[in-house]
Length: 288
Image (cartoon, rainbow, N blue to C red; front, side, top):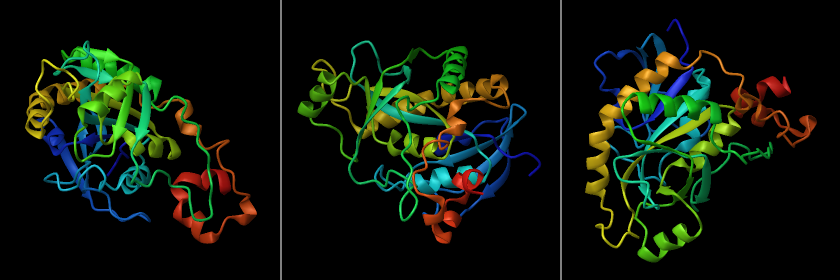
């Protein structure tokens, strides 16, 4: 491979089906946290090297809770990725965010309960800052590219991640609305937080598939409803990705890339050799 992929797309395997995508390599990696959800494909698109990862595995075999988020982010980091675009389905908790439209959120609320949330454990502690959980710079380019592809885009809003795999009850949905949440999904946490720990830019292209279950004049969300909208929007996502690769600068001076600078808490002399080796791709430049 002549050029490391600096940008990666995490989403469904349908994203790979672009006529002008030249797939060059497929990596089946092992990480200290286990294997990623799927082989990572690396190819050329719009003159750029890009990596693709199927979040739920090939054939959609992992539930949102079963996705190995840590292995996914770690593997992309080891391949040289510095920016991640997540393509995900979501439900709308607002009347003005309609099915078929796109949201690029700026806030995240973690309502999950059964997922490992951090790389930092077992002898190496870090307290990462995530007041702004999404990369503003990457989100700006993603918004422009989605609009250029013809999508109706809403910039901003709070994304609440629930555990799943079930959908919400009506009482839960109305509670999230009362809290001021804008959209609801099952995968952005802990993915966004792990990307920040790995000092990678992260942004979400959230495809609205339904009004969850709160909307009295709309049918409650079903899996069939979600997959139908996602299928319809695959072409939009592909066009937006192509435009993003054509316009996104090669390098970024974003603060995301220095997120661990003041986050590491364990005294260097107290960090075990095993912990140093396990997290070397993340902390090597700080610990030497």
